Image 1 (cartoon, rainbow, N blue to C red):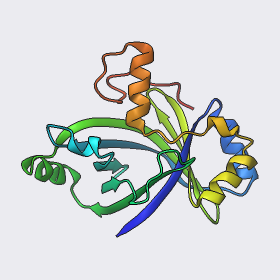
Image 2 (cartoon, rainbow, N blue to C red; image 1 turned 135 degrees about the horizontal axis):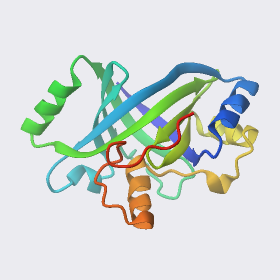
Image 3 (cartoon, helix red, strand yellow; image 1 turned 135 degrees about the vertical axis):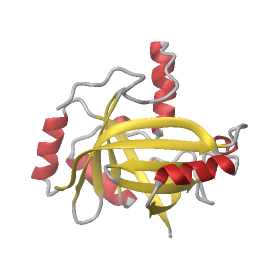
Length: 194
């Protein structure tokens, strides 16, 4: 089933302080810190990337999830929030799905990993992602909830971003000169764990 995903990201300087603040403003931990590995699939000519769409197989703990995301029909590139039409489903064997995709011409094109902790309140989610290039948080929910929650977290609006992890990785590579091909802990030195 498809749904509209609306979110923003922001960098996290102090993960413990953010977790404490989230609890103070009514969030509860939904999923404890769990390892997540994502593999994006695309055609050899990167057709999906050119369309700003993704086809992803995610392993989150012991669960496998297949996701397709695309721009909405009314996409506004200047919007404050990132919006995507998201269709996803849980599958039994993500590796088999990856093999099927490859046989259909969608090859692994990019992998990214993180340690994710999920929090939620009555309306939306805040996830904390410890990646090889730093710690980020995502607010996901209705746009007005995102704006209100960002204020409650005392975030400067200029700190909110709509970039994907792939785009953040591209920026990081330009800044550091790294030759890493994937945003994985094997290819990039791991951040300080909490």
